[in-house]
Length: 281
Image (cartoon, rainbow, N blue to C red; front, side, top):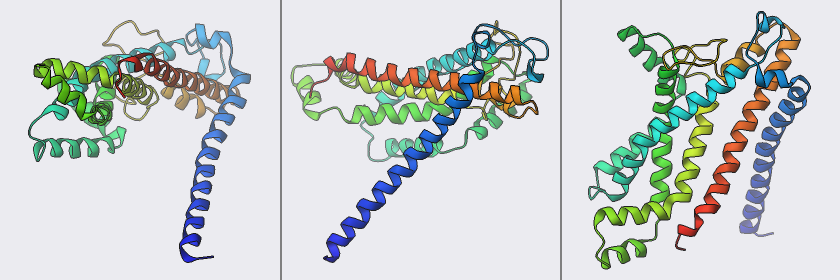
C-alpha cells in the first residue's frame, strides 16, 4: 500500500471512530434520560406546581418550571432578535469590511466562547449595584446577552451565503439599499429562522447563567420582577436530592426539556422548508 493510500485509509478510520464516539455519547445520554425519565413522568408533573415537600418526595409537579423556562427563553430570544438582526445586516452591508467589521466579527466569536456563568456573574454584579433582586426580567437579560453573539454570527454567516448575482441584479434594476436588504432577508429567511430557534434551544437549556439572576420559585410566573423557576434549575435541585424518588423526577424533567428542545429543532426544519420558496438557488 502506498504512503498516500495509507494516509487516506488512516484518516477514514479516524473519521469513522470520531463519529461513532460522538454519536455513541449523545445516544447514551438520550437513552439514559428516556429510560429513567419515562417511569417517573406523570400527568401531575405537567399540570401542577410543586406542593409542600415536593423536593422531599411529596406531590405536585413542575408546571412552574416549564412555563418559567418558556417565558424566560422566549423573552430572551425576542430581545436578542431586536439586536441581532440589525447588527447582522450592518455586518453584511457595511462598506468598512477591511477593518472594523472584521474586528466586530472577531469580538463576537470570542463572546460565543465565554462560559455562560461569566455572563451571569456580570449581570448579578449589576443587580447588586442597582439593588435589584433575582427575577424573570434579569434572567431574560442574562440569557439574551449570551445568545446574542451566537445569533448574530449565525445570521451573518447565513447572509454571506446570499449569491452575489442576486445583489448585483437588485442594484441593476434600480433597487435602493433598503430594498436590496429586503431581498437579502428573503433569501436568508430559512437560515435566520433556524438560527433563532436554535438560539432559543441554547437559552432554554442553560442553568449556570441564571442561577443567581432568575432565582427560583415554586409559584407560577406572574410578573417580570418576581423570581422564576426553570427546568435546568429544577433538574439541578432534584438530582442533588438524597431521595431516589426525587432523583427520578429529575430525569423526567430532563425528558421534558429534551422534548422542548427537540420540538424547537423540528420546528426550525419545518419552517426552513416552508420558506425555501423565497430562496433563489
